Length: 107
Image (cartoon, rainbow, N blue to C red; front, top):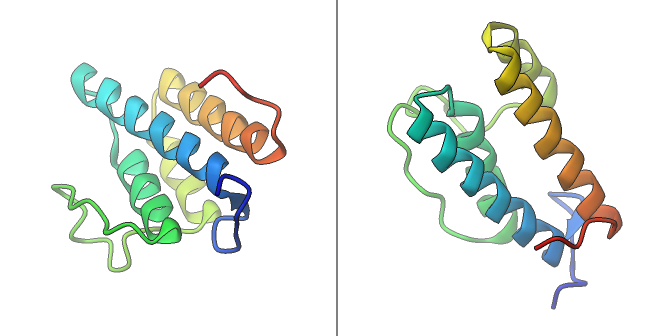
């Protein structure tokens, strides 16, 4: 089942599960620290949608009509983030790409 390719996410099922788990972890950690986590909530919903999982309802996402933005749109949002938040986003994106290529097996 892990090898099933998900076209919408451009990754296989195993990588999508790993990305979802890591994104949830980052969301919970960021929320605990009082950081901006809207982008992570959107990513969770995007991954859930691509995997056919009912999306989680996050407080404050009502103004996002489809619950997600393109990478270009989300990059514009990042301009108001702290450097630590930008670094976290870059790390998560790198891990997702590594997972999609099968290079990251730390979970």
